[in-house]
Length: 376
Image 1 (spheres, rainbow, N blue to C red):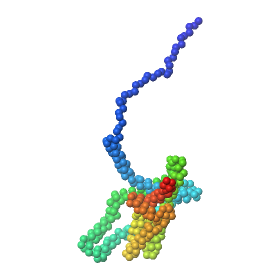
Image 2 (image 1 turned 90 degrees about the horizontal axis):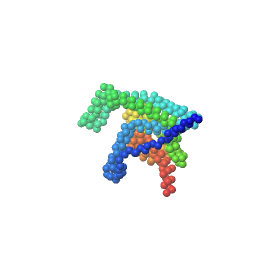
Image 3 (image 1 turned 90 degrees about the vertical axis):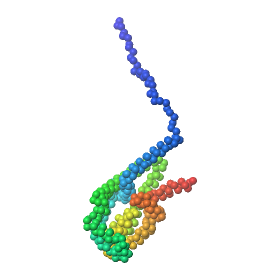
Image 4 (image 1 turned 135 degrees about the vertical axis):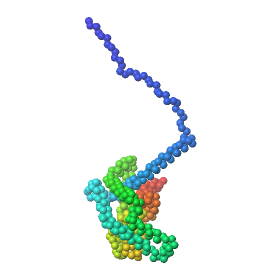
């Protein structure tokens, strides 16, 4: 018989791994004493350094943040117009394109009509500046001061030399490089605001929808309604500001008819655009109207300036509170106080954002804070 081969046992596949001794990193020490003065000083100093670094970073990028805020504000302001066009059957993209095209078209018409007027009047002012300064000597008081201190003669010599050298406008902007920097910076800012406004307008429903998903489901509907109401109030503010500027342009047009001012229609258009700028808008419009009236006669210029000042007071204390109360449902006193505080804190941007922010705060108080306070 054949011999049977012995069956060899295969080594087990699951061999036991040798236990590896943990690496010795030393004995764990006691935890830090949080009450120790050194620990407190180190944490405080670190927090201060981080805060200063962040503030410097925000300050360095402040211009970018300003452009973003202005673009977002314009997007929310134009959103009611986009929604109006959307309700007529167009898609969101086509409605945004139509709205922005109308705005760009209006700006183009304004530049086409008003730019020649402004250039002509500036050239006339520069040409007549020496004679206007010389006419100051006709006033006895100014003439005596000029004889004593030579103020008018010095100023007239400076203006004459600047005009003859052709450096009047260039010197106002800090030289040739200053003119180039101002022009490039202005064009870049306008293009940036235009592009960001387009993106914000097109993506506003998507952005708000994604933001609402971060809110718990139990509160999502209420938060969405309050936020949509805030966005609507920003748009209402823009509409109210356009209404106020329209009344200002109508006033200047009729003032030009009464006083027989040149360029009446162009002046009305310039004042309409200036009225959209808070804080300094009417100051710019007032200056342009007065300079053009000065080409007629000093008396007409004085009447124009006084009339414009009276109208601005009427607008600030009567017209603006009534329009903003109807559009934003906020008291007139709150409108004035918000504009003053916003302007003092953030300048032009603060003046733009102050009134809609005040409307948003009042809405949150009415819908959230006051009901909770009434329950307690």
